[in-house]
Image (cartoon, rainbow, N blue to C red; front, side, top):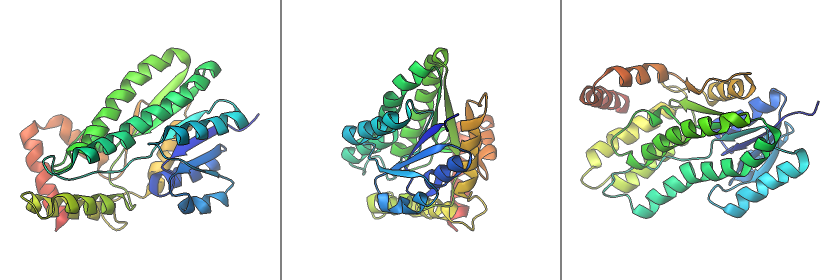
Length: 279
């Protein structure tokens, strides 16, 4: 039997990089896509094919899917991992940056799904795994654009799960907490550029420090990317996957608090947590 094929977007670092390795170890023929192809060179040593993939480019996305389908037929698993966090006050972040945040985190994910669904539907099987975040259920000050995209992906995924079920295609949501990667540091730097010296500077410095602290390897709330990758692999290989997988240190606790606490109580608890994380 031929190995099943998997395409992982945003595979140059962190969760995407480790997921490509985990899926390959699980027996998949893996294609790893990202804009920074040089960062994926080590994946080649494990038999993973790397692709230049920009989820804001129609030509890039369409050619990547066409290449894989020409070689293997319908893609069995799509891991929509590409994304970034755009932070800053809604007042100060330019609308062009807000649109780019949605273009990468939502529209790119949607278009990649559109491209693989016809083949999956003809095959009567397939799995689309969307990487959101606990940020699709909770919120942060100065994170309106980022959390807006993650809330959107949660709703889109739930609707997609229902419409694709009759065609044998599963849709799964992965909800990581902070991971040991460069993501938090980059998001914090962007936040300070947007709002670090204006009327929101006090909040900005607290949130930026908290973001950076939870993405480092030594923090109590920092989860190795490999842990998330193993969860994604379980979702890809399970006979009947769960609809969503919260994963990472603190993920279940934070989501439980969100369900239990009234909004204003959660506001206070979460802001005090960020002040502690920021030191």
